[in-house]
Length: 294
Image 1 (cartoon, one colour):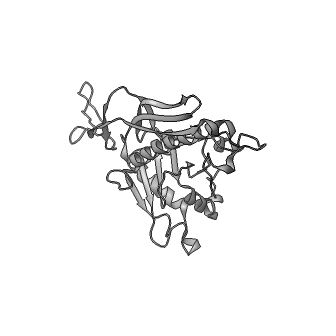
Image 2: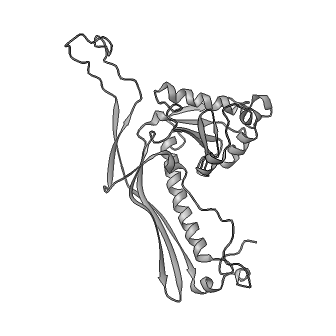
């Protein structure tokens, strides 16, 4: 049975107060976007269509005569606006529990409340980059029925080709996802397990699982894409992006955590972050769907 902090099983005996092995919480999706500060309530941006610019009919880029005017080029963009939103939460701990609990309840409350904000911001960024899992302008690739990563026919499972199909779509739109070194794929924990259990993946010549990669927050690398795992990614889907190009997180207030002390009564842990997510380059993103048959 899970106990709440004030319940009897958590009362102090002669235990170590700190629970060992608690991993620090961290952002994942925020690492894939540009982070820029803002002091505006409403923030406008241009969402563009990715095409190589040309001079149009009778005005080619190639072959400008000596002394002639240069051809005019222009990119199609759509002006969009969005307002900042605050992501926040708080939790309280009684004074007696701070003094007498077996575990460091205040430290753990800070960790948990902070993680709630981190999850909310990352979830917002995932929804931005996938257009809430209902794409209209980003690239999409759907795995054919019977070829999912948990297909009953083992030889039909081919994560390597599925990722390459997404890379193809982004590259067609003139985003150098591989040569830039900014190619990432993000998936949830279950789909990561399916990928890592596939022999076509671990035996592929581009597969890397190195200490340096893991230390930097990336679990592995495959076909030039760094692999990340996040619980905000929808089951049966995964996101492939060119990082730092696909979008922006405009921050009005970076993550702040405060402990509000009501002496001899309780401590309240409060955390928040304020910002707005902007999808500037939708075609630098691709949503892979139908990863699982169940």
